[in-house]
Amino acid sequence: MMEQLCFFPDAGQSKGLPTDFLEYFPGIFSEEEGNWFLQKLIAEAPWKQTVQKMYDKEVITPRLTAWYGDLGTDYSHPGRISNPTPWTPELLAIKQIVEPLAGTQFNSVLLNYYRDGNDSVAWHSDKESILGKHPVIASVSFGQVRSFDIRNKTDHSEKYSVRLEHGSFLLMKSGLQEHWEHRIAKSLKPMKARVNLTFRVVI
Image (cartoon, rainbow, N blue to C red; front, side):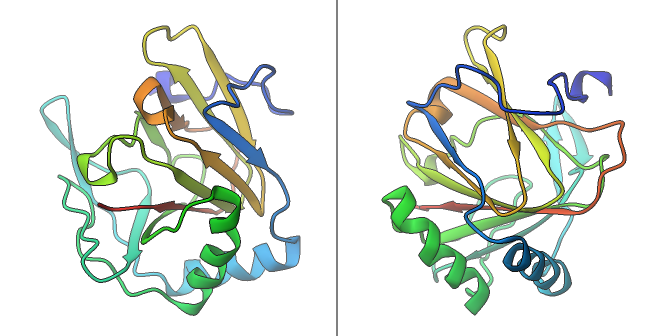
């Protein structure tokens, strides 16, 4: 599917990122810490491949997912994992580091496992009602660098990209989900494993 292929340069972040809506912090975790978390999560998370409905067709999600959270943070949404797995010590340790940066206390986290360049997530915004009207989402990445593309919902020519590096943190601020879409595109280049964690507040 050619539309999914990344159209941004390999090196550097796009100029003019809308920092009112997102902020990028490289190197929150050291390379050694990141490597340890990556291998631990790949080996031990209860990964699942879900089915989603797109354009009246059911399609297999091109990545693996796992859902963790407090008791009662069921993520009831078509094609998504619902019942959360209890927090692990590793996830709680990551959560404690990102919460002060985000200024938010999170009660759940969605893990995405991108096994290679074929794994991706299409254009979307995280605007489910269970996340509230103005969700703040904290994103942590371990493993292969992938481009996080965003585009303005009303003007698709306004688009930017952030290279999510190993051990990095991306804060998606209030307003991003309402006005912007994001994706991780497929890649024609060989890609190694990547695990991304998006910490959320389920209402």
